[in-house]
Image (cartoon, rainbow, N blue to C red):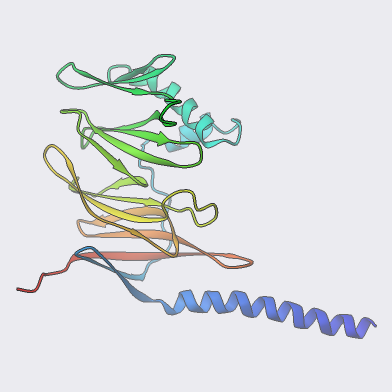
Amino acid sequence: MKYLTFIFSIIFFSACGQNNNSLEKEITNLSMDTLQANHYLLTFTYSAPFSSTDIYGDLAYRKQLTDTAINNYFVRANIIQSYLSNHLSNYFYITDSTLVLKLIDGEIVCFNRWDSEKEVGYIFEHYFETIDYYLLIEHYFEESNWLFVNRKNGFQKSIKGLPYISIDNKRIVTINSDLDAGYNFNGIELYTILPDSIQTEFSIETIWGPLDVQWISDNQFLVKREHFSVDSTIIDYKRVLIEKIKKDL
């Protein structure tokens, strides 16, 4: 009996190992792959791991603030909003029901913290000084997006993931990973920053989940990705080259 148990154990763990090795081999073999999105070609090649990107400039403190909070995304977001309302009072403030953004010309733009009729609410997330845009969380009961608001003219642009601004402040890559629940967008987007607005270049869903981005040049960035299998999650890192596809004459 002990001998049979030993044999079955070897077979079982060998099968599990083959499944994991198969997924790792499949991902490793994709040393160079491409995605076509709208009129753009994205070429993925191998990259070494990179340290986490802090798009806020105070990510460590935000984590510290919410470390003991209830494990709820929106509770944590509201804690951060309260913290920011004290430090960015020249830019926005909150009342019991309203989030109020201040524009450069003295005008204000108001958002409901929760609109029960439309079932949507807004939470202040960040102010990107380099491009002069506010970032809000636009949340529903089971899903969320983000909203850019131009501080100069009030222009609004809904985006589906967290924004990573290019080194030259001319492009934005947004990413979101939702491989598990599937309530939110899972993929990558590219935007161009215009003088008074933001233009969508592409929005594409992916079979892998993008977790982090780090720009390394005007048209290249690194991306951290997660891949789900039945019994494991594989993480890999890629360098991405963005090229615009020339239209046929």
